[in-house]
Image (cartoon, rainbow, N blue to C red; front, top):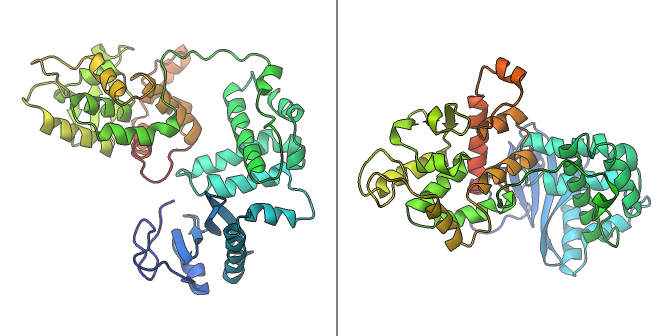
Length: 410
């Protein structure tokens, strides 16, 4: 969520100039503040969603780690109550305690899995996600597949038999959904253990041993985990040379290395931000239009300035008229000690799109220029979903460069 500028000198981006604010908000400001994050002081923030929903967030250091703690919505927690709760939690944290554990100890009823999941969603998913659809989907998958089975069960009583009961009905029939459910249940239970609400090994670990074998997913190329991309991209951007530029362009467009290395300026329409790859250079033998995000266009501008001689190739080698070799891009990766392959970044893109976005399956497949397997679907497909892909590639570019948070949606 982008920070909004608030009264008293908070710059866009959320960082206050000069002295940190203290009790900066007023009741009127809480009611009227626009979309964004508004600081009150001492790590207390008012978060206002584009929908107008308002809630409190406390950002503090707990036992050496920064924690974002949700304090509730403004309809049930007033400004004074939020400040007092924040004060109490800061005092506990300063003394070396865990304010979340202290808060939970005061409850007469044990925390249920559903309560824990909603808290994780509010405190860890909502503040850091950049796509509203992903935020909603993260919780809705648990509500549909998990809550009916163990939603009312105390978080410290959830065991591996429960996980098996949740996953068994969907493990082979809805494999991708099952994997997402497993990951999100693991996240909730990891949080509960870190908060001191349960002990022992996470029961999600090793649950596959009690489930039937899923159809194997073919993996041809080693891929960088998608969460590691922004940091890795920073290192690539800081690397000079045409090979590093071509690698950046391949990542930002999610196309194959050969298509990037053989790209010609005649295929690029900078004004319309489109790269049209002719059919003869595509694996599927079909023309492929690639929407160019702002970061991809910037790579092209740098490539123009870097070229020692102007020619048809966007990324020429030092040999006149010859494109870069695949080894040139691989050498950049080796020099930066990136444990993946160039082609593997397409898998990185696909994993990000699945985990962090809610774009339809056909849009993701079209971005990768995968052939449509169904004859019926091919017969009725009359569009390459270009405008939807343009939006997705803009989000991908923002994520890759660390713009607007941790990235993505699902």
